[in-house]
View 1 (cartoon, rainbow, N blue to C red):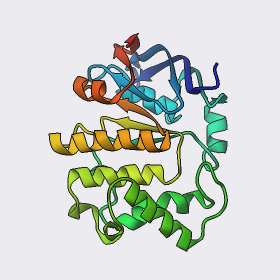
View 2: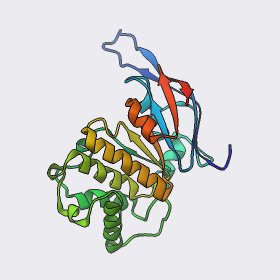
View 3: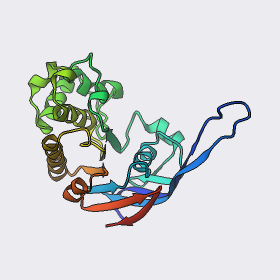
Length: 246
């Protein structure tokens, strides 16, 4: 592995096992991922595309160690597995994820400032890269910085999700993910629920974040035009396998 590799995925496979409907029912075992091999480099925007159901989101969940898998995933040269991940999760990890529906990702009861600050409160120290403990004042300053980074101002801290447009909600989700300073941002169909104009703005925001901070992004989408516009390299998935990388 070269020094430029951020994430290395080696021979990763995953199966789905259905529950028995009754005592004598048979479990159905379905292979979702089949021997995936990928490398994502520091500072690149890497695209992952394919038809719905081909395994794109399942692979993202494997990277985050949310589900079991066979094979190996290394982040910055360190092998991740379930046991190590649980031990290291509160201290440092490489990736944060942005989901398809920003509205469903935001607690409607809490204001935007609270939602963005929450990961720092849960972390109890600092960011993933800087473990120095933040004071309440420092956390608020960090929230203001994140809002500006995603194109919003500090006045949004007092608003709630229902007061925002779809694009603004997704910007808040991005700010919330970035506040822990991850090495990799996983955007899973991050523009599919937005109108065309808002979607283009979010794509441009990803470009700006990548260019200005060197943030690596795994952009998952079935939208061919968006993938071609944003990504330097693209892996095409089909039936749980990588068909080719272009």
